[in-house]
Amino acid sequence: MTQTTAPKHTVLNDSHRALGAKMVDFGGWDMPIHYGSQIDEHNLVRKGAGMFDVSHMTVVDLHGERSREFLRTLVANSIDKLKKPGKALYTCMLNERGGIIDDLIVYFLAEDFFRLVVNASTRDKDLAWISRHAEAFGVQVSERDDFGLIAVQGPDARGKVLGLLAEDDRARIDKLAKFTATDTHTTDGTPVFIARTGYTGEDGFELVLPQERTVAVWEALLAAGVKPAGLGARDTLRLEAGMNLYGQDMDEDVTPYEAALGWTVSLDEGRAFIGRDVLEQQQASGVPRQMIALVMDDRGVLRHGQKVLTDRGEGEILSGTFAPTLGKAIAFARVPAGEIALGHAGNVRVDIRGKEVPVRVVKFPFVRDGKAQDGVLE
Image (cartoon, rainbow, N blue to C red; front, side):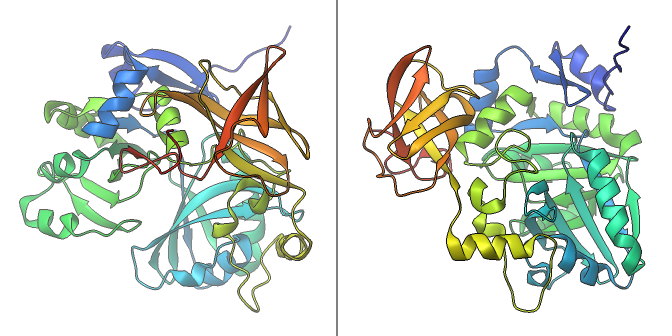
């Protein structure tokens, strides 16, 4: 008889249930998929402010004099782009084959202190990989499971959060640049590590705070008029914004160049990061596969695993969904490498239950600042 492990709960689990959330197992965590209407929650974030429980994400602190040197070898982007404390960097952590172990954010807090935020589903392998390679540099690796995380996203999100912060700190936090973080505290003294980052394509803050204060801050946000949003809206928002999902759009058998993440690779001189030799070979000779963005003008939904037909061969849909902001189905697909004309329906088709449906190839992202990008809507 096979035993199944019960999903883990974040500190906000009871809060979700009290709000009537529909709960699902997400990567071993009991998480809210929606609180009544996924589309309403999506639109709320695009037009106002919504908040997500992201406490299932893993915060890892690195301490040690050689932390920067260690990160130079661990990740594909250049950690030396981080010159001022508080700056953040999006990057991939690769295996020796150039495959993506995980995508993550690195925060530079001091020369001997960096903070990583990695995906929930990859927690165990990430911690094992980081710890294994940190040992040679004398870097201490600490999982911060004492934290809760709340993401507040949307055009009105920053204003809602600022209203909860200590009055003498609001002006400073209001000036926080994108992809930057700092320490602050709420009006009742709760310490908060606040980052102007997110996973929706909208402005906002991600709050890292003591687990024992997470429920109180969640309730204060509710009282301030911020409504909760579930993983369903988070997924449609990030796909519209052209953001990859680990395990669906990339994994250990996919390199950054095959996942449209070449912009996160820095082949800076003299830096021997793990997987670099494979990426150099791909840069020189070209990648066998590429990731493209698709829009379907016919009715229907594009779904993971559907076959994609091109003049150069077959590929498949990675992430696919109905995009509420656009009123159309959109998707990422991985197909054989080669030039594909933008915008012409018919040169790429998707096999939907045996019928070849034409789709258009467009540029990433589909939506920016709440509006469809050029060429996405005809």
